[in-house]
Each structure stands twice: as C-alpha cells, then as structure tokens.
Image (cartoon, rainbow, N blue to C red; front, side, top):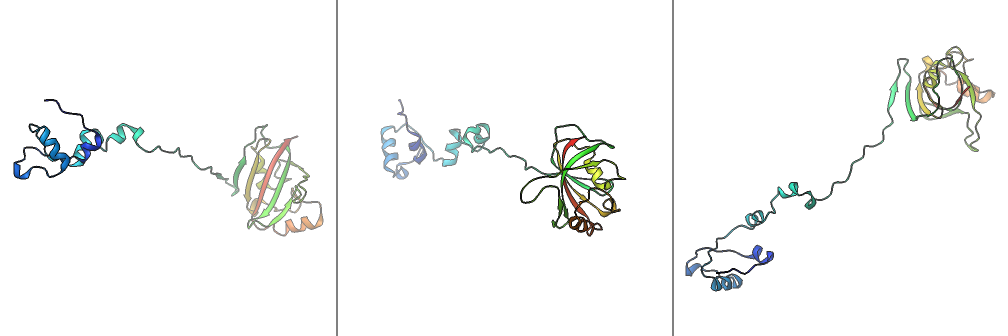
Length: 209
C-alpha cells in the first residue's frame, strides 16, 4: 500500500488516531475519509508540540539555525570622556587629542583658552564670544610665571589638542602676577575676584614656540 503525500497544514490539523474501535472511530470528516481509504494505517493522537519537534521545529533549532531567529543589532559602546585626577588636585578631561608635537616643561606655547567659574559662569576668554575672533596668548611652562594648575594641564599636550580642567585655588592664582591674566582692567578684576575658588579652564594648544 502506498500513502499519498500530505501537506504540512494537513499534518498539523490532523488529530491522528491509531487502532481505534468502531465506537471511537474519528468523527472529523477529513480524518474519517483517510481512515476509510487506508484502513490498515494505525494512527495515535500526538500533541502538536511533539509533531513539530519530530519535524525539526524544536526550540533548539533556533540556536542551531540562527537564520530562523531575529537578527541581533550590533551594540556600540557610548563615547565617554574620561577624567584624570592629578596629585595636585587638578582634574583633566581630554576633549581632543592633538596630533602634533608634545609640550614639555620649560617650553613656550601659544594657546587659546576660556575660563569659567565651577558653576559655568563666564570669566574670561581669548576668543570673542560674538565674533569668534581669537587673541592667542603665549605662556611659558614655568610654574613661577603661570598658575601651576594650568602648567600641569598643558604639559604633555600635543599641538591641536584641547583639554578641559578643573583647577583648585591651591594651584591657581596664588599670586596676582601669574599668567594668564587679562590686560584690561575689567576682565582682570573679574578674574582675580574669583581667585579663591575652583576655576574651569578649557585650553587649546595651537603651537610650541
């Protein structure tokens, strides 16, 4: 006897009976029709879950055949600006890593900077906030001539780099003649009036002289 091929949908819907007495023969029209055509076929009721597993659609198949599973999106780590704390208490963030020569102790460097209070309040800048024009300053990397905190920030920087730093007052303007200091009376007075509090400097190294 040859069995006719059945579709997958028919197999799923098929109640499947085996060795049933006449009183318990299938009432379903499709099943009774098959039973009449092939009386020697014995069928037993199988749960749909078992039937699917026999056909290779078990839960493990999603692991063995990842094409059946939903594609995983590539996760990218968020960009994080790391903070370096120096022994002096200065906290430095590397905003842009320069590609040029590295500044060393004793060098003279040309920089642009913006100085703010720790609450973000603007104090002074070499870059005009409206026109964008800059007036870079030249600073010697010597703690007897510039504030020590800023010297620590600039030492080791490369040309083209930009750093943001929180400078505590102990390594800030401990003397009024330390650079960088504005030439104009108003900005100078404003800067020195905040000399006893932490200051935020954002500096960009333009060149090494």
